[in-house]
Amino acid sequence: MGRLDDISIEELHELKEQTEDGKPRERVLAAIGRKQGDQLDTLADRHGVVEKTIRNWLDRFEEEPIEQAPYDAPRPGGPAKIEGEDREQLFEQLQEPPTELGYDHQAWFPKLLLHHVKEVYGVEYSNAYAYELLNEAGLSLRTARPQHHEADPEDKAEFQATVEKNGPN
Image (tube, rainbow, N blue to C red; front, side, top):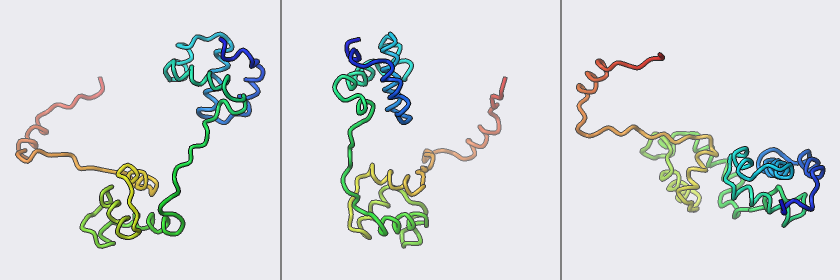
């Protein structure tokens, strides 16, 4: 067990009561399980992670003070490029169809959002962040189903009329 020799099971149970739900609590529960004799593979299955993750979690209890071991170090991102009233204004604009702002599109999509943000706010974002902004604004991305350019609508209708649907057995 090595990693948890200097920590009592009582300390871990007390820490569990003080720990918020989510990953921190999972880490404490894994430490309790290990202290009670559970094998790494058992803990990994129980917590839905690989054994290496369990080892990393348990290493935290040796390397850091017990109160800090369950928690990740803060990882602040860079400052927001658009914040405050400008950010609120952007999200309000995203609630309207792009046609209201003079674009030839009926719905927002990442490239259009990136173009709009660059033109109006003078800020450039990555494609990945455009998806985050759309999500934060409460929008979801929908794409059209592809249809082959040679597909015959009559053949499709005939197929759909003749195919048997599988229902519940």
